[in-house]
Image 1: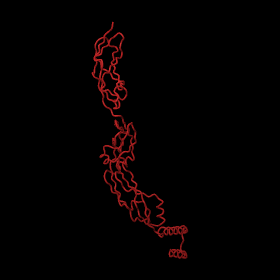
Image 2 (image 1 turned 90 degrees about the horizontal axis):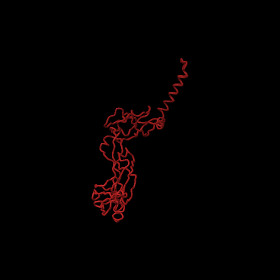
Image 3 (image 1 turned 90 degrees about the vertical axis):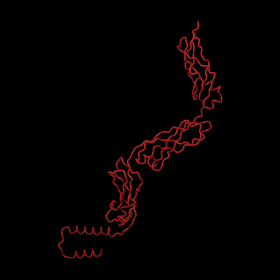
Amino acid sequence: MEKLVKQIKKLATVELYWPKDWVLRLLALLFAVLLWYFVVGEDKVDTHLLVPVELVNLPRDMVIANQYKQQLEVTISGPRGLVDGLRRQRLSRTINLAGAKPGTMTIRNNAEALPLPRGIEVLRIQPAHTNLLIDRLIEKELPIEAEVNGEPAPGHELAKLQLEPPAITVTGPENLLREIDVLRTIPIDISGLETPTMRQVPLLLNQEMMELLGETVVTALLVIQEKTGEITLGALEPTLVGTRENYHYTLIPPILKVRVETPLSFHNNPEALRQTITINLEVSGLKPGEYQLHPRLRTDQGIKMVAVEPATVKIRIQEQE
């Protein structure tokens, strides 16, 4: 530096032809010297940078199907001023995927791929390559199945299990979704339940599906009811509906027998159960004569008719004088 200044002084003392803009030229020379000093003569430092990897122009019908390192560890060397400036900038490693096709792509990470200014030397990049597995992006509807553990309260059973939603539409890599036909919930414990219950149940997902769906929860409606069984009740008299005062009605047979399905607790008191059952025979509009009628059973809620014996009833209608 001192040698350069002495040469400038020596030239200044020699009588030469000076151009009109010699002052501007001298100032430019001084600025160049100062810039050279700060860029080249400044202390060099080594440092590490984390440079994010950015994927651009990926076709809409494609997807990255593998895990890749999304940051590069870059070791650089250069003047302290430039290095400090890089720390304040947002550097990135951009990978252009325009025209990508299904398969594996290996992209080399080198100094030319990083937007670094002159004067910065790249010492190391880790990883040296970025491997991408590119797959087609498809949409698939997957039904949901629930698993249950345990037993309801004694005398009760799980009559129905309903999930909402019953299926989920998933968008993801073709190779992954091709192997999956159904989604399952974590086991639902129904131990000791005796009434209908609604629960929020997470899905049982592997890591790949978790990345696609996240923490997914469905609503499970558990219809718990008392166990039922069949019981036969005899000596039931039908009720005639729509009779006329001047008509006489004769039933053959006059009493019927029914078989019904009820909660098991109803079987403990058959007489009370009998009071909840009505057998109707519709005779309105019928003129004197003989007819075969089908009895109609009316019961309380929770009682289901299985059969009436006999299935038809003979009725004789006579007009009274």
